[in-house]
Image (cartoon, rainbow, N blue to C red; front, side):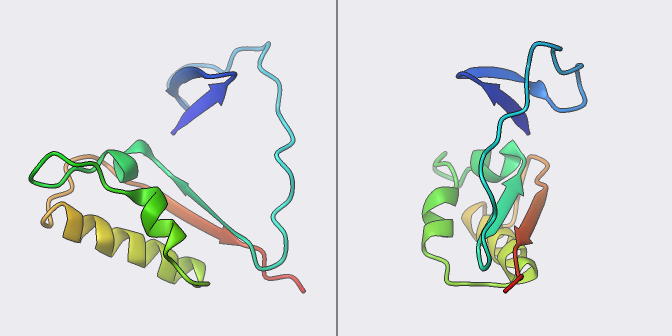
Length: 101
């Protein structure tokens, strides 16, 4: 996972200290019913046998409202199908959903 600041790419979190000048940014709220999927680059960088990247954004856009567990399981299953069962990079997925009324 990389921290982006004004288009600049930083090393993965935990590899190097976050620069002191980098300030947190308010990105809004996760409203009731909305979900957020956090993932490492292995989810987007996964390639099929022809070298095509996994279309994560298109996959997510086609999903209906799912529980976080089903969303993660669905992304994982789609990655396995896309790569022919051979994911060659580490992949971490975390789905959050606001279930408050």
